[in-house]
Each structure stands twice: as C-alpha cells, then as structure tokens.
Length: 143
Image 1 (cartoon, rainbow, N blue to C red):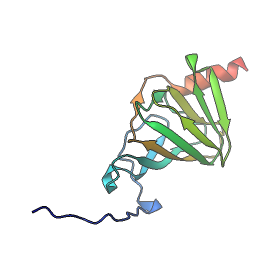
Image 2 (cartoon, one colour):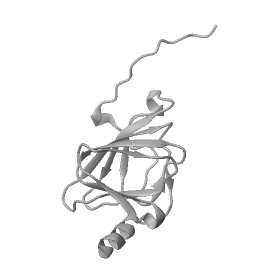
Image 3 (tube, rainbow, N blue to C red):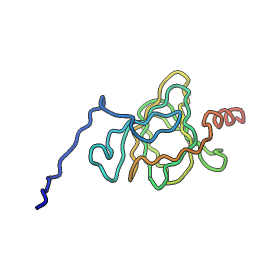
Image 4 (cartoon, rainbow, N blue to C red):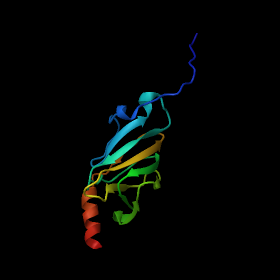
C-alpha cells in the first residue's frame, strides 16, 4: 500500500539560498525555489552582478523567464549581434522568451545589481561562449 503525503508549504530563508544551479560567467544565481525543495515546474531565485560585471551570452532553452530588478541599473543586450538593448531601473519587470540569446549586466561601476528571477519549468542555462563585457564595450564605443 502506498503512503500518501499531504501537500505542504516550504520555506527557504534568504540567508539559506544556494548557488548549486546552472551558472553563467558574470552573474551569480542563487536558488530560492527549485527541485531541491520539491518544486517540479518552476525555479525562482536571486541573480547578482557585481559593479561593472556582465554575464556572458546565454539563453534558457525552453524556459520562459521573468525578472524583477531589486537594486542597481541593468542592461540586457539581445537581437542580431546583440545590438538591441533595454535598460532597467529598480522596480522594473522584464520577460525573456525561451531560446532568446541575451547578455545582462550592471551599468554601475560602483554599486551591485540584484534581480529576483523566476523561470519555468527550471533554471535551464545554455552558455554560448561569447563575452558580455566585449559586447558592452563595443556598444559603448559606438555611442
């Protein structure tokens, strides 16, 4: 006879977030909600970029991503040759469709930047081997 368990609510304290998840150079992802706590169709966590730091180019496979900028000033490059971008301020939300290559970075050279990010069905990360810092420097020179 199988034992049935009641659904329950799980709690992860902010101080207990873990970095054991897919990562991209230039960004640190910390898991709050994910498979380790029993979530089967969503990942949610905090993503941090130090001052002046840029992620390498990546996409999230079939995962849909939503982000909320907690602090700092962010830029996300995307599109052909990463020539399009959007800038975000604290309080802004962003949606990144599945399989869309992008680079996110911290526009400030002095203040850290932090997001809350949710991704479904999981934290899928496909790194593309292209330096986000180089893309950003190219864009700044064009301006």
